[in-house]
Length: 389
Image 1 (cartoon, rainbow, N blue to C red):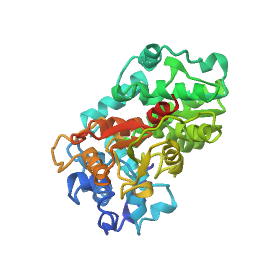
Image 2: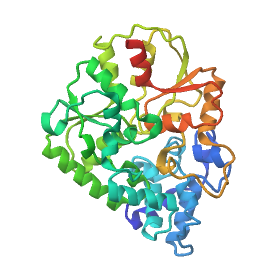
Image 3: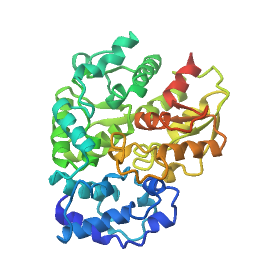
Image 4: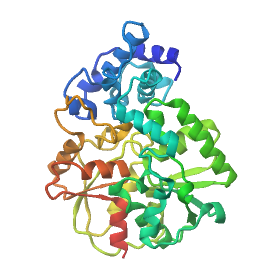
């Protein structure tokens, strides 16, 4: 986003704070800090002052824009921002504001490290590319190499292969795809980051370079259909990449599993007698309106009682890991309560025994909550596999 666009969009915010006052329980950042100084309107006000030349971007001030989880909840409550007619989410504006700080090198060190890692190793953790297939080696499952076999679907594994708490999820998804007769392959260790978080962190130049390189790879391999594990990658490939020339169909794995269950290519027989609630990943639900496939999957599992938390679907509460927050924990200790702890409390309030989700970031963040006390957190694929065996 160009500086003039940031200025124009930021001034459209009337600073009325209705995005917080109407539903204070939906904005994760506000609930975490309980301060109007750390809210979307405060970020937009800071942008106004910076672009008027009255304030300079500094690492200390970067706490404000980088505290946001980019969940997009403010978009549902906003009554004034003309940005709604120009960009899909006010988070696009926050990306532009973050870019002001990135250009000055005035960002938290944790964020600098993530951007350096992605630039150097094509993943946020700075891990060697061979790490991307560790899960496959440990599973003992033979996964076709898409670059050699040109399968019907490319399975893009993404960060799920790198986050310690989620490395078992790609194995489970591949077992289910095999069970359902899906012809798929992966890019093995040649898979590169989609760049979604790089874009959200304000490094638009690096994002575009990564996207162009990935699109070139997909075109070379004639990728026509893709399945993603992470909603964050789904967002990049289905929304951002087409604007840069990518063609083809993109599916989140829950959409594929829902169809396989409906078509009885995966039979769910074993009862799972649990009361389960679903955590809507922001990039799956609010960003892309994929609400029902995960719920239909849970309803199809014998024994499962599905209950909803009050903040669900378009009003769902974030896990706390989006917008780079999975790597960045505010060092200033302004926090009143952890976002993940709040979400676990929501689940307990509806007497859920387990929380199901469909995002590696959600799974990682909720598992790390400090108030689980017996509440389990599982990926939907885990429950499907358990019921189908």
